[in-house]
Image (tube, rainbow, N blue to C red):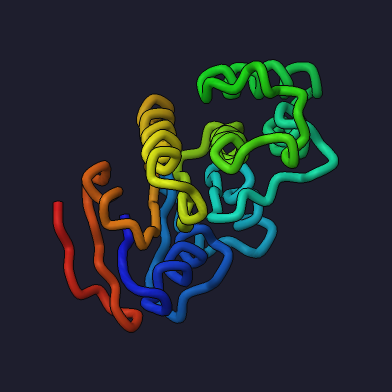
Length: 190
């Protein structure tokens, strides 16, 4: 996990790791691939197939229900709608939201919206989930439930997760914690 004050470089590091920004130097390897040697289309393909994103604001599509928001990345990747919805339904069940499958985002609580966003991030079986303040807008009880679900599902899928948070209480769920300040690593704990 990444911790540090606002402006410390957490989001920039996540964007770089997620291949949304190019670093000035170094390498980014994911699943044995040197991602910085790929062209824009190659990096886009890696993002679509191997990286799931969860943000502080869920970015769910308001005109689609929960199940279709989760199925969308699969359908974009060419999976048939019926198969995509089947997988989305399984992910919703794992999130404890099967009864909310056909609700639009505006009909869901903040915690439910964030769990749908997590399920969407896991839809393509990513190797890496990048989460930028995934519980930043949630109350403490919902934060624990949502973050616990994220960590549990990522571990079950065998993926890695890189989380940026201001919430130091969440670091107890993390295997490693990097503390950033002014764009520099100032502490590392395991």
